[in-house]
Image (cartoon, rainbow, N blue to C red):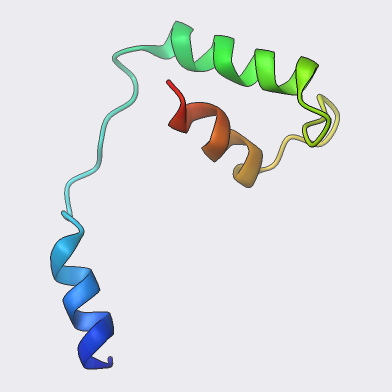
Length: 57
């Protein structure tokens, strides 16, 4: 691992950020993005789209 990679690893906490406290809000954001964002599709909703939808929760 490079020095910059090691420094970046030290900045990111190893603890998961639990999103399960607001599952209805996350589900609403995913549904909203799937319906109204042209880059999202209900038929092809991949991790990248889920990340953007949950990041706004």
